[in-house]
Image (cartoon, rainbow, N blue to C red):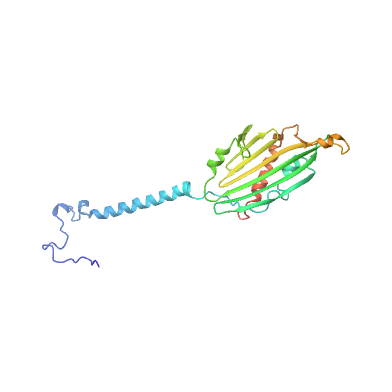
Length: 251
């Protein structure tokens, strides 16, 4: 055990600190040169530590902390109810042919949900226009997905081929792009903090063929003649509903 040092003897015995006349101020006080240097040293260390700790907190918040999810929590299926109504109305859909139940996965670093909706509408010439709508949501809880989002722009995620065109969309999240994958498929992608939303529309048409004709044996889906890119405004409005539907009530 280390005991505290004892102060023994008087000024003449070397036990106490001796301050020379050179350290005295004319008024009887002590000059700065007489102060103990370790006082300044400890003060400097404490100040440097405080600055370093503050800088570390700022750096962590900007670079090392989890991304802001802006209150998004996976909830009801984004393909159910009236969430996609702005899009289905623009498509003049009269019936739904299939609704895929939402598949969801909750993980320690990533929450995901997937669903799809198939709708049909008369094309005005005896045939049927059919459309498939796909919705995906990824909530990144540990790492910022911005770099990945920007890297995958201009790429069709289904086959990794370059898209036909890319356009910036304002007013959605932190960053949003509309991508024409082909004449038949349009996609809207949105980044908002740690959340990534994707809404994809694909269209095709089936010509009406009578069951009692030979053509019925060879009938099959034919691509729509018009460009599905015209539905981009409806995709944007539907995306607003999708994003709103996944926010907690307290956000």
